[in-house]
Length: 325
Ligand code: ATP
Image (cartoon, rainbow, N blue to C red; front, side, top):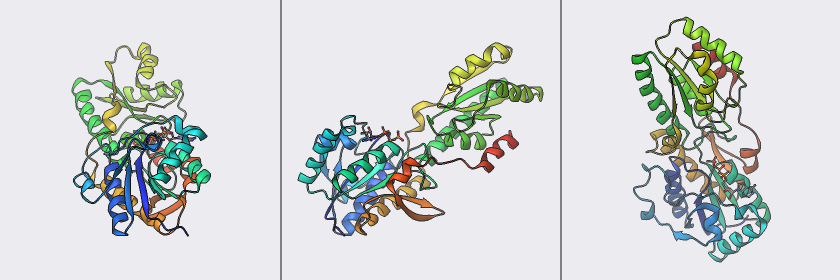
């Protein structure tokens, strides 16, 4: 078993609220165990550019409540190539880093798996993405905050939809995963929820809408994930407008407001647990793993299973959407 003396912590891919809480927990847990900590700025790009910063107890003070990430995020094309990863490895080896805590989503973990296999560097992945699309954890860091941000917006839209008896199509984030759409749809009482995991034909959408409108609902809200096969809110409204011209149809694309903001208490606690668990996993000799929380217990799974297995949506929740519409 390799003894870890210095870890590198980085955030990568898209930012998510709670990443700072994870950086803080990883740093403080490592220091508690006598392990030094280097922050790597801009994810994999920072490894290639040697963009390193020493982290101590106070450098992670007063960040638990802040969205974004003090270490910045980046997408790095050079890391996709063996030559780029060689430079990255040489730089972190020169810095004395002998273990990595990677906070990010499936792309980050894919890169980390390859890197760990190529260079034998132990890596513990911390699932940080608003999409909640990683297997091996019930929730990812940032999901709860994004969900509540989207829900807050949907509640406000519902007020105006109700006042004007309008039909609103609200687009939430989720290119490949519909968790945000599904749960904001339920929590916001949407009449129709569309997401990439379920195929809903235009004919079915129109039938559902006809039923809803026939019941003289005062307001109608459709929640659609950006990655739904309909193409998202704007495309969907273009499809529906000709047949529903008499309804005052409005579109709202929530966009990036769902990524920012102060993390909820739930995300701060999740991030704190997972940041600490990642360091504990490295300390205990795990090498190529992701930490998660399953049924309220810390779970360690092979890093690969985080991104190679698609996290499925439970049928019971899908049924609920149809029943409660
Ligand atoms: P989010 O879920 O928020 O999009 P992510 O971690 O999936 O986050 P990506 O942009 O997909 O975000 O990946 C982050 C970075 O991981 C990429 O910019 C790239 O540097 C690295 N990466 C992704 N896939 C690979 C791969 N197959 N090989 C090497 N590196 C990769």
